[in-house]
Image 1 (cartoon, rainbow, N blue to C red):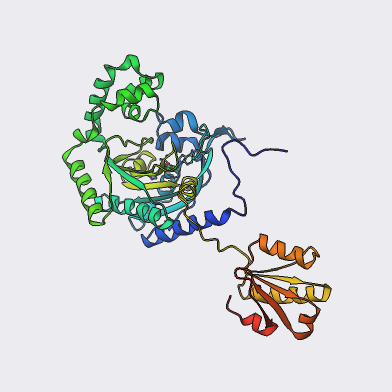
Image 2: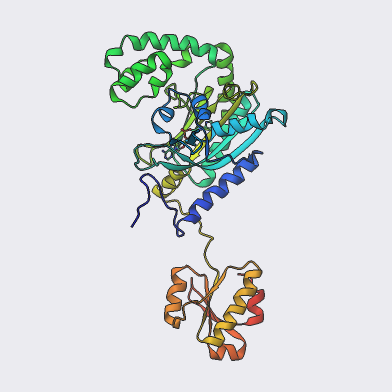
Length: 415
Ligand code: HAM
């Protein structure tokens, strides 16, 4: 037997309705905010992520599935959705179309991480990217979209943390302060952070090493360094969230693990799914489009991890409606009766009713067992008597009630 690769999962048929439920809500919430779907390739030139996500990030340093293709090009399976969307925005000249461009996607992502609950090597994101608007009202709207999805899907007990990490100007001052602070602690820092100190000190704040975490606690706080414009922007985001009645906590520790962020950043975190509690993460990225060769177009977005959403729904006992079950299962008791079952099922299917019948030549008891297993709502028994009288014996599987229903009535019945 060949096993599935580590860190990947099959979505089996008895489970896939849960994915469909989450995806359906993602699409419908995105639509209510005016977002349209974009689909970008599963792989990109590696350069897209080097420039987009950033060379000092964990994703680029350790986690990418990168390989040379047969034409010797460096290719990477997308570790996240934003950089590919930004590449597509630039390549397709979308800055000339109606702005803001409001986009969403549901996609596989690939990161070579140590698998654990809520952390996979292939996982799925529902993501949103709004490109072209500077106003803080689009930051608030992006957060609201994520919040609406989370609420509508049935997640409770998540905390929204927000922060501002400033623009590239105020970031400079902050980075100097960080360098000064970390230089005084360099002896106790991990090797990677020593390297980050020169290249990108902000990344140190995101380090998972216990010693670095301790040092990080007393590091200078970004909110003490952001410029007046960034401050006003962040205040407006908070003001609008309050108007919308969304609860949040300002947390200067939220810096996010990708380099493209500027100004507003946010995370929705749950206590109910263990160590990998971040269900959704996002923020503004005003320099990304230009960094990928485009115009100076700002952007903001987020991504939700679908596996984490499903885990959270399971761990908190939320029931997901399963509307993928067969409505009526025909149980014929002979060859001729089987033909009738075939005929009736065909007509019902053409009317959009989910209908099925025996394919295995099973006896009536075994057919009922099968119907029960597939969760059929009704079983329509056709024996020789029924065939002669032009009826089926229709059993409601939920309450066990039975009635004779003529073929013609059955074909117009509201199920
Ligand atoms: P991220 O925080 O790296 O951000 O990922 C977003 C979400 O994807 C996480 O909150 C988590 O739910 C899920 N996720 C990440 N890695 C894994 C994994 N190994 N296994 C399972 N789930 C995972 C981004 O990817 C940004 N592109 C979000 C964004 C969009 N920012 C602006 N626009």
